[in-house]
Length: 480
Image (cartoon, rainbow, N blue to C red; front, side, top):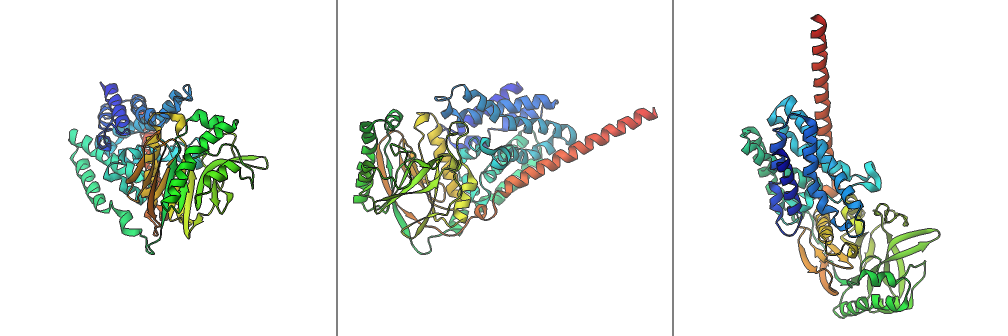
């Protein structure tokens, strides 16, 4: 029965991460696991239950890997579940040492820690798991707005409090129910924080166009070797760019690695220049060669010149081993507006967006290509992650996905204009250049850091009490 409860949690988390069911499902998703853990006496069993429950997030997060790396998919899912397994085993220990109510009260800190620490590049380097956080389940609920305070960790905290409160109600732990209700009630008035502190004080905006070519992956690959294929790759982009220019776009954005062949400094292929010529300014994804290094890059087009202005920083482990990671660069000036940039996985690493805004970016632009994932959940999940970046930074975000879905996201995390998956299409939106900084931009992820410290503190006092009890038993034995 307890295993069935853990699997039910996995199913509810997986469902809430998909468009099939709203994110409100996640408000009770962990309740079955909590009930199972509080009926468990052995930490090892608790860890196993937590591992099965943790599979739900991994199954969805890495679904896009399955079509291209089928063997890696189950390994990634299994590894992703380990932090919740550790947290669940520790929760059983806390229940035995301090009681059921104390264990329930610890759950929010444990869940935040289990999502925060594995996502830290300073801890795990390129293998940090920034993808599977349950915070993305709340992009279609008001809870997403607390990301402005402390990133995804703030979302996970409120989500965990809600789950712990429902579990406490079922188990008749009245103090925990009251504490959870008070915490949520205090948080609700502060949800719309982006609108309180960010603004377009000078009324400046850019008319930004997305050109979503939706070129099949096979054509993109052939474009590196065949001139005719390269022309087919560029054709939809040339058409969409011309249409955007005719509608008065200030900035046209293509997708990741769209350019048909790698470029060296000063290289402007004729067919690329012809496709971009109508655009006053454009940002285009491509591969660059500089000395002995290869970069996944963004190129800036203006006045007939193509200049490399950004290099991808968060590279996909192993699959992008041929690339050299980029470094932090100042935002790009487009018609007097500072534009922060990123490529693909850069959009799922919150500190990179924070760095861009701290450096002066008044809007954020991400170029990506999720065509490899086909019709899995990954392209939609990628868009959801990017919506959280908008809330965290209090900035409009432009998400240009070569294969779709692409979209314009406002500072509240709402997708105000969306281009569907697999369809060559374009859109143009007047994007305000915003000022002001959110608490997350100013202070970082204080909730994640605080929860991790609380978890370490709980572990310390629990181990200390255990050693004291064992010492007392030894003394009693000696006296006997």
